[in-house]
Amino acid sequence: MIDDLSKSVLFPVLEEEYLKNLETCGTVLKLEPNQVLFREGDTARCFYVVLDGQIKITKQLGAAEIVVTVHNRGEFTGDLSALTGGISQASASSVDASRVIQFDDFKELLKNCPRSIDLFVPTLAERSKELEIKLRQQEKLAALGKLSAGLAHELNNPAAAGKRAAKQLGSAIASLQKNMLSLRGKQFSAHHRQLLRQLQQQAIDTISRESLSPLEQSDREDILTDWLESKGLEDAWELAPSLVGAGIEPAQLETLASEMESQGFREAIMWLEATLTMNGLVNEVEQSTTRISDLVGAIKNYSYMDRSAIQEIDLHEGLDNTLKILHHKLKYGITVNKQYGNNIPTISVYGGELNQVWTNLIDNAIDAMNGKGELTIHTAIENNCVLVEIIDNGTGIPVEIQSRIFEPFFTSKGVGKGSGLGLDISRRIVVQQHKGSMNFQSQPGKTTFQVRIPLKID
Image 1 (spheres, rainbow, N blue to C red):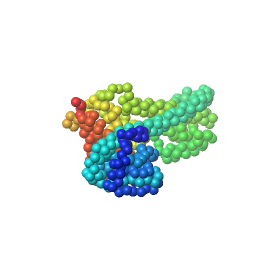
Image 2: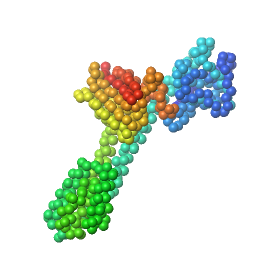
Image 3: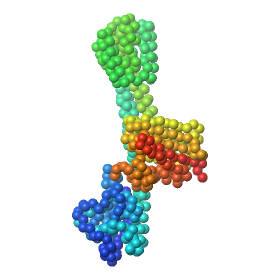
């Protein structure tokens, strides 16, 4: 946690003599309890030294506000953003009635008090470094948390479906066994049994290839229910859903209905419905368990478990696994277009880290489209490099912040929604670890991030 930053090297206490000299160089402010000095995300304009009371430094991480440290008399606030005029990485407020010295121009302070350079600058630099390390860890944990939540959501659906189908399968088998005994009666000729087997096979084939909309399903159920009731089946409303789902229509049952007695026809329909229900439940269990297996395989391949740091990987497999992991975000309104190049060779890379890049870029694209739009992933060979383009049709990156998009801690998202490290981490992975490049082009309606990875890393 960020609380670990509370070390003497990061929060030194100024000597009393030096503290008194500083009072003449800045403006002394009196603060009421809980009064805000500066907020996270604001431009860091001023530098503060605590004279009396306590100043609490907090950092927003998701929905939680974390206390980084509490400054007492002789301690000073800030990190290198106070010197560079960057964005404040935390918020500061008084715990109780307090007094602080405010320096409006930190550079001027360093100029007028040369001793301050050796005192303040190393500490501020160390704070920035430590905060970046901690937030990088937090970013990875947050990414893992998102993936875990998405994976749990995706696994829950097929697991629940499989459990439900398995529970219903027992009663379906019992019903089928009961109806099979009835089919052995004298009222069922070999011809009738042959007709039923043909209907059953046609229906099973239909189940695997036909899908009705809810409205179509409902309309056909009403028609079949009315027809079955006209043939004397009082519980037709219970039988119709399974039969319609298998593509059974009244015309297919006319021959049986005309040739068989009412009781025999009823038993034949019940047998047919039971066999189709059981077949559907078996298919549901199979599909559910297959989906679970695919997801487990995807997360294992995504993280490259049980493999060395550098692996020969299939780039498209890594992209596909990332899409599977993020499926819970994509499935509610985003169309994915895969424009994968032919003959893309395997490449030697840090597989887990590279998948983190795809996760950050795709996740950002989803946010840019507010969960609805078109995501395109294009791959190709270009000048001894593999080119991967992540393209979205979202709102685009405003021109005024494009030059800062890769800055550590800079984010266009609200406070607490992003650490501003996702793109910085991604570029470091691509550039430093893989000797590649990352750049982007953006305008309203189209943003393209381009990643180039050398086919061979020296």
